[in-house]
Every structure is written in structure tokens, then in C-alpha cells.
Length: 366
Ligand SMILES: *Cc1c(COP(=O)(O)O)cnc(C)c1O
Image (cartoon, rainbow, N blue to C red; front, side, top):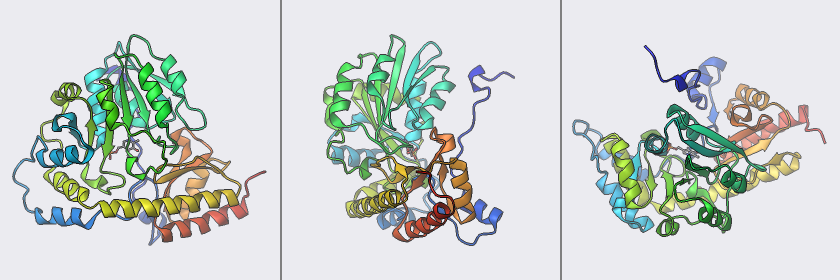
């Protein structure tokens, strides 16, 4: 047998450690997971009620057209129904894009560090991946533009960026779009869209009218708290959507994901409440960092990247023993940092006190 040569040596995705595994390994009764940017407040009650009400409807295939959720989202964001494509999480839309646009004689451009799935999927298609170093966690759009050539097919803007939490503002993004040649597709991955509070964050949906080479990715996995159900979507012009559609497996969302997403969209209060709490908590993280002389990356998301001026693995292991799962920056391109998901007030307070212990025993050098 012979698999594609580009698969040789490809790592599989390393998710945040599962809670049960950590409990078992370390004999802990309580473990708090702040590793995967999940919503610490769960999801809207309306979403779980919606699933419960159809819990036994398992024999029939889901609606492959996703009609109900499609109609709902189109109305909410003000686009036509033929401007949407649904994925099994927005991860799957990333996969569609790479399958549809990338071949071994093309290249794609990402920031570095950024979300790992762009590179992984592009590599599987055999495309060259041009990784352009970020400046202080922020995409260097000028350098990304310079990396474009006639073989470039996709350029990825993760906004806000995972793992840094930083963002590209509206002026910078529009200027960038105006300068990207028409043969290059621009992906604006907005997984944390709902959490953003910056006034100059780009509102990208209206930009679709002007830029045919733009696709926006959104998801129900983060603020909506439906990560377990796997549903995300892409928004673009109808022609681009119909290019992608044959790549999509016919029943790629479950009936439960559709029902929960529809119900979740009806509960705007839940999102507003989560965002308000997240914004307050982020401020507490920033204050904590200031107090202990730690550099952090200003975040527009529900996570924060903090420079502990020591190996990220060391921070990870210290916190793990105390019952907290976070992400070490080592595998994320920020070796002396840790990426921590903002938890509930109580979780954050417990985390701060453990971090305080660590920093008191081993202070940051001035
Ligand atoms: C979490 C995340 C995604 C993927 O989310 P899905 O669960 O697949 O919808 C996509 N992009 C970024 C930047 C993310 O952080």
C-alpha cells in the first residue's frame, strides 16, 4: 500500500487533555478544563430542550440542505440562503476549501503562529504552505501580501487569531482585501466573532458584496457552546458556495446539531450574558498579569495567551497537578506562554490562586 507521500510524518491533532483521563492519571476528584476555548457556561437551555424533544428521531437521515438553520442564519445576518455552506464544525469547511482549491502545484498563505488546521489540510492536498511570521501575535498582512504569487490559491486570516487572541482591524482588513489579487481566495475565520468587543473589528458580511474572493467562517462551537454537536458554516457569494458544495458530504450535520443551532439562535440573551461575563473575566486576567509582571496578548476572545517567561510545558504540568488543564504554548508557536480559556468566575479565582503560588515560588525575572 502507498498513501499520499505528504501524509508521511504528519502529526495527528493534539486536543486538550480530556477531564476523565486527567482525573484517573493523577487521582484528582475535580479537574477544570480551560484548554479548548469551550463555553464555561454550557449552552442555551433552549438548545438542550430542542435536542431532548427529538432524542428518539434517529432513524431518518438529517436534512442534507440544512433548510431550517440555513433560513434562520440567512435572515439573522442578512444574506441569501444560497450564500451559506454548512460544515461538521467550521473545521470541516476549512477541509472543503482545501479540497476544492489546493493541489500540489499551488500554494497557500497563513500567519505564523495561527490555527493549525489550515496548514494540516493544505499539506494533505499536497500544496505548499507559506507561513508568514506575525508581529506581536498580529498577522503581518503586508508580508502576507508579498508572499502571494500566481500559484497562490488561499490566504487565511484568523480573526481574532487563535492562539494569540489578537485581531486585524477593519481598515487594515479592507485595505488588504483591496490589494489581494482576484485569483486568491481570502478566508476570514471568525470562530470567536461573538466575543469580540473592539469597535474597529471588521464587519465582514457587507464586504461580500464587493469582494467575490472572500469567505467568512463562523461556528456554533465557541460562544454558542455547541462544540459537541459539530456545526459551523461559511458565508460567501453564491458562485463560490456552489463550487464548494460538491465537496461536502451529503449528510454532514446531524439532525440534533441543526435543531440545537436553531434554538440557540433564538436565545440571544444567553450569548449577551456569556459575552458580558467573558469581558469582565478577561479584565481580571489582565489585572492579574499586570500584578505579576506577565506580558499577555490583548484578547478579543474567550482565551488569553500569557507569557510566563518559562517553558509553557512547565506551566502546563504545574497546573495539571493542581487540577487545571490548559494549553502549553510549546506546541502553539509561543514556547514560553500558556493559552488559558477564560472560565467561570469561580474557576478563574481558583486558577489565579494556583498561579499565584507558582509565581511566588518562582517569580518572573525583572
Ligand atoms: C475552534 C476553532 C475553529 C473550529 O471550530 P469548529 O468546532 O470546527 O467549528 C475554527 N477556527 C478557529 C480559529 C478556532 O479556534
